[in-house]
Image (cartoon, rainbow, N blue to C red; front, top):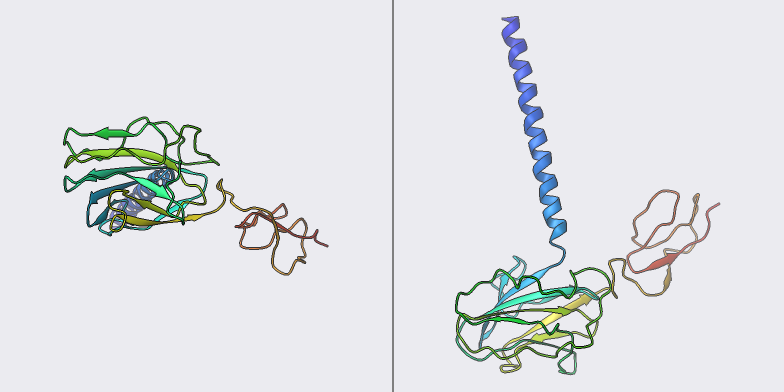
Amino acid sequence: MRDDQQTQAHSRRRFLTVTGGTLVGMTAIGSARQKGSQSESFQLGGRVQGWQGQAPNSIEGKKNPTLSLQTGQTYQVTWKNLDGQPHDFALQNSDGKNLKVIYPNVQTNTNGSGNMGGGGNMGGGNGGGNTSPPNNAIAKTKIVSKKGATQTLRFVATEDVEHYICTVHPTTMKGKVETSGKGGSNGGSGDHMGGNGNHSGNGDHMGGNGNHSGNGDHSGDNGDHGGNDGN
């Protein structure tokens, strides 16, 4: 009876160990996938009544969904013509001016396959860094009128981008763009004094909501937050 109990206990410990390892592995894979998807792409449906959000989940099913972008990064948009009416894609500033932020190698698929899988190797950055539009950037894409056709483009999110729009139907097919940061993942422009300015410790302390690394320099959310040497 004692041997049976020991065997059952050993089997249970082995099961928990294996299961725990599997869960840890799945978590690591999920984190890696999430990290790798930071170069975000968007999928939209184009119809006269408005742009239809299709992917990612944050915009799915929404009409003229707001796109939240990081300034200085490159993003990809693939949209599908849903109604057979003429549509194009442009990004505008607050004055309604089309901005030359779109890479010129726009890919249009008019064979009606409806493939929304992306545009393959389009170049133009990978969504990171502090990117500027190329010298030959365009202000709008070509008009696509065939139902089921898709168009894939990449653009740089500059800080003056306010809207994305179909210039043929500007009153109904217009969505807002929200940008944050001023290029690069660290963001920030200029030095900011954090907190009350005076911090005690063993090193240079940066205020704000930054990540604290112990006795070294601490960085804030909105750039470099100056601090004083601790006592």
